[in-house]
Length: 110
Image (cartoon, rainbow, N blue to C red; front, side):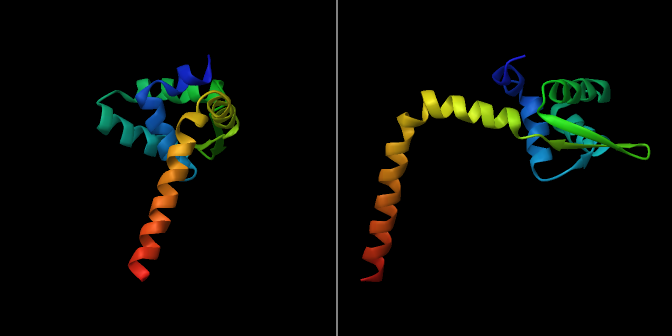
């Protein structure tokens, strides 16, 4: 599955957002996602499986718990693709914004 196919699903993006804060138990992830999206625990498990199988998440056992964490490798690959093809479209605008912010700060100090 292509990285953007994995990231195209809002449930999987939300799971990655949760995991970006650090390792989390599968049950904790499941509770949050079930409440926010109204899906079942098995459905959340399927999304975790897709993330795992496509390298976006790693899992380790701790007793009976399964702890998930983000694996940044596929995210770096997606970021590299964006860098090559699209970042040039907004970088000049962000640079100009930074210049204007700095100019405004200088004006307020005067």
